[in-house]
Length: 156
Image 1 (tube, rainbow, N blue to C red):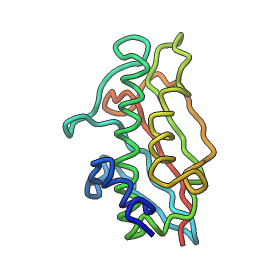
Image 2 (image 1 turned 90 degrees about the horizontal axis):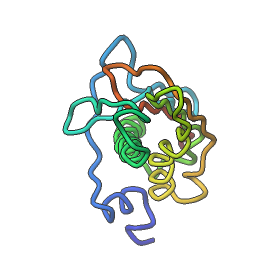
Image 3 (image 1 turned 90 degrees about the vertical axis):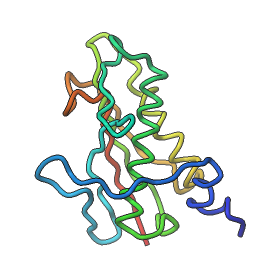
Image 4 (image 1 turned 60 degrees about the vertical axis):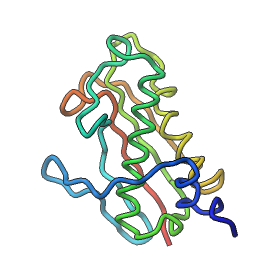
């Protein structure tokens, strides 16, 4: 098995370093493991360590939202790694839930969240990375962030 056959090898090939586990901003924990499932709390988009503030359809484009969602996927994988020790233990990304801070007329929430879904597929491969998903437009996200995403993973 080559390095690019593992999630850590694929991350390295893309030049992605996972961040350390972030401290929650409120009264919750970053993840909960029950049985073979890990529920990763919602992560907001960050740019340069600060909330990535914006509203899709007003101050941000769909492609900017995709970049924000991709950045969140990296943070989510960092939390998932902290939960299980090694991303190779992930058997399936089960569910992704994406919230997009958007105007009432914005309709490309699904394309924004593709920024995260696509990266998860690249890192975990088509069998493990393919997941059920929901994407919603919301009036506001904590700290004015443009996107928030949570996920559920099955692990060994």
